[in-house]
Each structure stands twice: as structure tokens, then as C-alpha cells.
Length: 263
Image 1: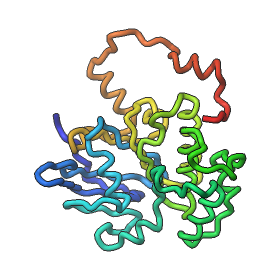
Image 2: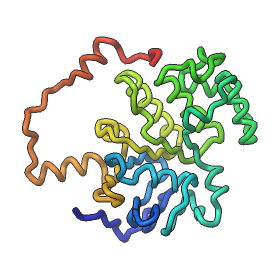
Image 3: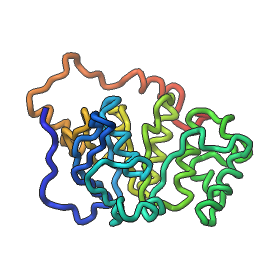
Image 4: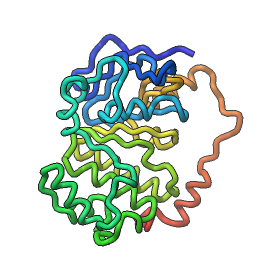
């Protein structure tokens, strides 16, 4: 298996630059010297099986985990020298435990906007993720899809340039997944750069302009989904089973509708 080598040409509009990033836990090397760049305004996917190193990489970019070695630049800021400046321009999803159990959604947004020293209208923000009718609900009372949409809403409070989403649709039903895909596309349309990890290949193909495939701590491919698929087909690859023009998921969505639901 060959690791991916980044071309020498540097993207003028790269908002994230990662050079020879290494993360070790004792003798175990979780990330083995990876190099990649993310263009400003794109949805970029980190793909890989569990344990591949994609979440570790994401947490280093988010300033949540210390790297062992290598260089990381986010929005022109050096991770080693300006971690707080990086925090000011990124949006990171909180885990469920990060939300105050006795506050409703409107109150949580008001609290976070105070922590960020930002003036945010909670109802306008809830409108963005279609949760206005849940303003007085507590986080624990939401469905899985609603929780994910709200967690994305909280990443927008500090008006970030870059949004990091770690497997945002895991455990959601097909409708809630599609709704969340639409929301992620809207984030990009607003001008944000989105970095997403996922192990759903259909999700990456639908959302991402480019993807990096990580395996055993190394990037083994980096390109657009279409280019990677075309390269595979050019190698003579054929699916062992004929592909039908619809799937069971298509049947489900067609019969139940794609509009916003309580998902």
C-alpha cells in the first residue's frame, strides 16, 4: 500500500495546510506523517475505517489534541504559536455532554454567545437549522437528527471561517441524514469551509469536493470523488453485481417524503 504524496505546487487559496503531521501514543503511531491542504470554501472529507487516524487528525486541527510533530497552519495561523487565534475562527461540534441539561435551546445559545462575546439572536440561529419550534425544549428531549442540527447551530455562534464535523450523521435515519446533508451544503454556501469525517461513502460522494482516504495513519489517496471513481474504472474494475438504478433507501425516501420531519 502506497501513501499519497502531495504535489509540490502549493494552493494559493489553502485555508488549512498540514505538513508531515505525526501523532504518537507511546510506541503506537496513530498518524504517520500526513500532508494535505484544504481549499478555502470547499467541503473536504477525511475518510477511513475506524482507527485510521481521521478523528485524531481532526482533533489536532481543532486544537483539542496535541500533535507529536509536524506543521499545521489554519487560516494563516501557526498551531504551535497561535492556538487561541485558531480557536477564534473555527466551529467545533460539542458532544452531548457539553450541553447544560437544565437549559432550553434558546438559553444554551444565549449562554454560548455570551462566552464567545458575540451578539446572536437565538431564534434566527434556530431558524437556520429549522428548530424554531424547539426553542423551549431541552437538548435531551430532541430526536437524534434534531440534536445533530442543534450541535451544528452552536458551531455557528462565533461566525467561524472553518467548521469541523466528526461523523455528523452516524446513527441517523435516511431522512435525517439527507436533511443534514442539505444543512452542510448551506454552510458552504454561506462561505464557510467545512471539514468532515465520515465512514459513509455515499455521504462523501454527495458532499465533498475532495476527499483524503486515510488508512493506518497514512493518506493513501487524495482527489475529488469523481476522479477517484474514474481512476478505479480505468483500471478495469467492475462490480460483481449489476447496479440497479434505485436502492431501498430511494424507496424509503420516495414513500415517506424528504421534507423536514422530527428526525
